[in-house]
Structures are given as structure tokens and as C-alpha cells.
Image (cartoon, rainbow, N blue to C red; front, top):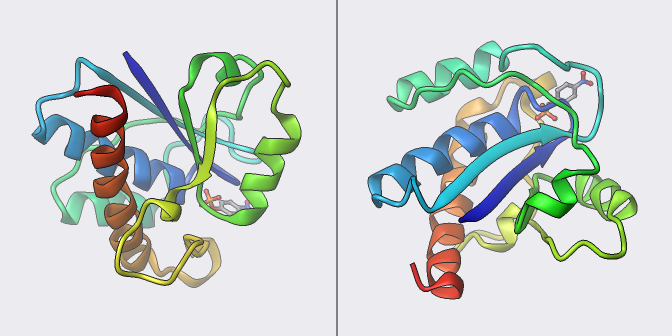
Length: 155
Ligand code: 4NP
């Protein structure tokens, strides 16, 4: 089993979008039994809440189901997850700062995996409402992330 965790600040906008999109791509590839997927936030602001309306509407528009609830990144995640993908550099720094020394998790920016675009950070749609842009960016990252995981794990 390969374990993949997407992380943003609140776990209501960007990382749920990435989780939903990646799960759909993994399902379409017939790999849902081999790859476990979740998302979390570095902050405690929205623990227990459903995803933001903008994320849910955008996923729905693209026929992707999502019913996750926000949770905070936990110490156990560093032992369980093989890949921890941050939505922006601020989240990346927070994850690295909390990472125990013995963790073998691969921590990266999701958009490090993206191809054909210059962006490295998924912009926060919480204030500007650009959820479709978030969808397009995380879709690019997620597609290429799966290709990398398949290669690294022989899937
Ligand atoms: P997310 O967006 O990190 O993509 O889930 C945000 C959600 C909530 C807040 C900021 C960003 N907030 O400040 O409450």
C-alpha cells in the first residue's frame, strides 16, 4: 500500500480538492486498492467541518464526489504516509518543522510534480474564490504525481 496525504492550511479548500481529484484519477487507473489517500490541514481552524462550498461545487462540476471532514495534520501521519504533498511553501515549511527525524515520508510541493506550468504553489481560494484555477493546478499535479508513484512503486 502506498499512502498519500495532501496538506494545506485549513483542510477545507485546496487539500480536499487535491484529495478528491487524486482519488478519482487513482480510481480511473484501477489502483484504489493499492493507494490510500487522505488530506489534512496544518491549522486547527476548521477541524470537523465539511469542505468549503467552492471546493464542493467545483468537484461536483467535474463529477467528483467528496465527503471528507477537515482534520489537523498529526504526528502519526509522519509514520503512516509515504508522500506528504504541500499546497504552498508556507505549508511545506510547517510540515518540515513538525516532521520527526525518523520519518521516511517524502515531503514535497504538489506542484513540483506538475508539468508545463511555472506555478509552484496552489493559490489560496479562501479569499478570492478562484476554485476552478485550484482544480486545474491540482489536476496537473495529481496526474503527474500518480505517474511518479507508479514508476517508483512499480504499479
Ligand atoms: P485551505 O484554505 O488552506 O486551502 O483550506 C483556507 C481555509 C481557511 C483559512 C485559510 C485558508 N482560514 O484562515 O480560516
